[in-house]
Image (tube, rainbow, N blue to C red; front, side, top):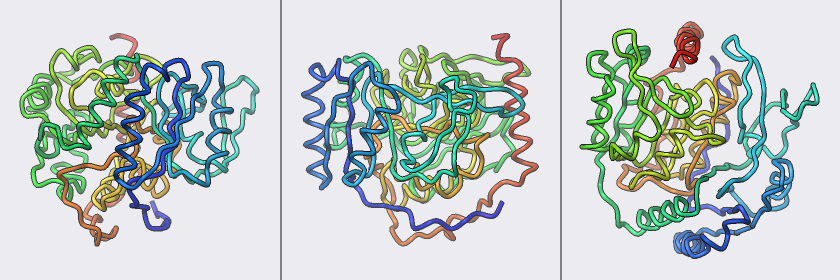
Length: 379
């Protein structure tokens, strides 16, 4: 696939954040929101806090963002805030899913052809801002913001480097590759050998050693991971994350539907039910980021989580709705990875040891997803 060359990735950090909070929980989390604002201000950024009523729609939420577009780089949605829904045919099936890209391209046209309240078309996308969210109980959200403050203040456990885990269906896709993470971390653990990608190995690695950054390729539903085990699947449910003391800070989840934040899901659980989880990228639908080079490159330049997502999507993700239209970021979008190797001189040519996969490879990866989807109802 030929890729257009976009403008250089924005690496300015910290950012000007519009924090939109569920009005019903504003009082209960106000102390932590004030601390968050102070922390961003101390980094040179800014935070504007706006309450949002529970009866609001995704469209009115977007209107609020648009009215502030000239003074923000991104949006952080806190609490049970509305989402746009999208429907399409992908991987041979009809699908409906929450779509946060709706909030990130402030100039796109969105279409609901059959007038059922679910979008089914759009003009070409190019993200204007980044948008991320976190939801949960007030206790969970307060705990998350305390964790954020401690991380920024330097009061956190060092979890080592990066951990790449690719289950059986993808063991030979870029086998042995570190996906450019060697430019972020001195230490990279790669587990893509079919003999070693069992659920117990995953749990042991992340509950004992832990990892600052995890890039995981595992079949999933919204509320569970499914590890291939001799043609059967061992499940690891969202409720197992805290009980097994999973210790990971940043996650890139190639886990279909695993970030579907409108229901119980594994992504939000990594953020709200662990002592370490800070930020996640994943998908609300079938799909995931199989080509993370631009995402990792922008992080290596010293940029924050939101800008890394925006740069990756505008460079690569926008080219394939079937795979990437459900991609989201969760957690604080303004956060930067600490303890990383920052080299602001890097350009894209430094990351071209991994070329974009061929259409044949993309098709084969899709067939793996479809094969699992056919089994999903049996779990």
